[in-house]
Structures are given as structure tokens and as C-alpha cells.
Length: 261
Ligand SMILES: Nc1ncnc2c1ncn2[C@@H]1O[C@H](COP(=O)(O)OP(=O)(O)OP(=O)(O)O)[C@@H](O)[C@H]1O
View (cartoon, rainbow, N blue to C red):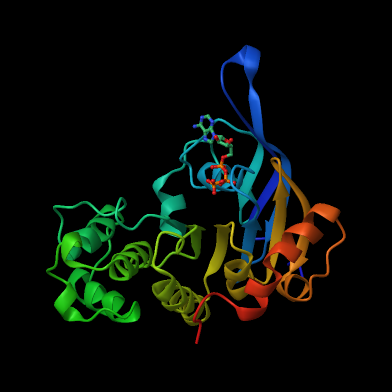
């Protein structure tokens, strides 16, 4: 079900790269709507434009045509602090996204200071707890953490300012298979507990079907059709390309993400 009034909307989004005479359009007239509290996925093979959409929405690339809206208001090309207060990003690579010389406490203090939030020490303790890391992790450096623990810190950093929206770019694909399911289950639980809205990008259909209620199937920069997680599970697609994509992943979807409890 599409909410009548979406929290996030993309309207005719197009994004091109390269010099004027040889612009390469990698996102082509994409539109989607995400209701408050919904988890929406963008799925497709490598290079189809998923991350480019997420980067545009998160303000990392302002060179786009069309409109992106938040709660019915068109977002300015240069996102203000108010946008980041409401929407935070979690990246694929927990190794690259944490500064090697900052202990966890510093990583978690910074967003609180930027957004002028109180109860710094308590919020750090509460958020570490919420992502399944105890107080002992507070004074550790990234190199003292496993990949899964680092991704939990990255999730804590995103959540500590209590945003409404998480923009998730392949948040488990850099992790060991055994750890992926733990992080996915954490994301699933946090969404319910905090009534979060997710936009998640993944090439992995099982991951999208596990987390998202709906997903846009992308092919060469376009969303060629939208599917519910139920349609993904039952391989119920209209487009031939989607059918092939689903068929190729059918066993993985039926199994769920590896070792999900
Ligand atoms: N800054 C950029 N300059 C030039 N081309 C770019 C840039 N960013 C992305 N592209 C190109 O846009 C296309 C889509 O990339 P994008 O990263 O969005 O794909 P994706 O679907 O997320 O795949 P992947 O999972 O491999 O990242 C690719 O051909 C990529 O090379």
C-alpha cells in the first residue's frame, strides 16, 4: 500500500554524469513514494543507478533534475542541518565510514554536538545498548572492533540524534555472511521500535524481501516495476527482466538472508 501522503517522494528524478557533449544518464525519470514508517527498497544489478539515487536524496550529489520531497516539501539542492536531523545515512563499508583515530564515544558525541542535543553521555549509553553494544565499547577504537560491531557503531551514529529516516546503502554487503543476518535483524527491530522509515538499496533480493514492504526493480536507470515483499517471495512479476531477476534469486529469497534466525 502506498501512503496517501508520502514522507519521501522522488518525482521524475534524472541524473547524468560526464561532460555536456557526452552526458551519460544513469538515473532516468525515476519516481517513487515512501510512506511514513515504511521500508522501501531499490533493487537491481550493479550499475543500474541505485546508489546514485540514494546519494542524490542524501544531499551528496546535488546535480539532478526532477524533485525530491520530504513531507510534501521539495528539498533544496543544498541540504540544511534540519534535513540531516530527520534523515541519516548508513553506508556499505563500516571500515571506511569510521575514522580510525576516533574512539566510539567521540564518533557518537559529534552528531549530538552538531545538532545541539542534551544528555550526551546518557544518549551514548542508551544508543550503544539499543544496537547491542554494551558500555565497554564506548572507549574502543575502530580497529578493536569486528566488522559487525563497526556497522553497529555506524547505525548508532545514525540513530543517536533520533532521525525519522534511515537511508541504507547496501548496509550488510561488506560483512561476513554470518554477521549479515544479525545486522539485518537489528535494522528490522529498530525500525519497529522507533517507527523509522527506510530507503534501502541492495543488489540482494533476499535482503530487500527481508527488510522492505515494497521495492522498485531498477534496470538501466529506471524503475521498471514495483513489487511488494510478498510478490518478491512468490516471484509474481509482470516484466520479463524482473521475472528473470527473481528467478535467479528464487532460492535465496525462499531461504531468507543467510542464517537469519
Ligand atoms: N560520480 C560519478 N561519475 C561518473 N559516473 C558515475 C558516478 N557515480 C556513479 N556513476 C556511474 O553511474 C552508474 C550507476 O552507478 P550506481 O553506483 O548508482 O549503481 P548501483 O546500482 O548502485 O550499483 P553498485 O551496487 O555497483 O554501486 C554506473 O555506471 C557508475 O559507473
